[in-house]
Length: 85
Image (cartoon, rainbow, N blue to C red):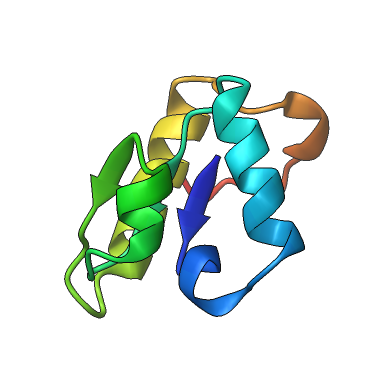
């Protein structure tokens, strides 16, 4: 599970964090993308990616490039005319 710009342990009390903790107990791996080392990072993250502010788009573009060029996507949701790669 990638939590990008989402900090449920500090901002959403109750259900959401409860279910994330249950997911973690059941083996779900969490990647937290956040420039700040937050409570969410310390309690959920298997990997923390501390992007510099304003670099989110570059990271998303790079991830999309790898997902598409290495055929890691579900082709049912990727249709031409998306020939931007």
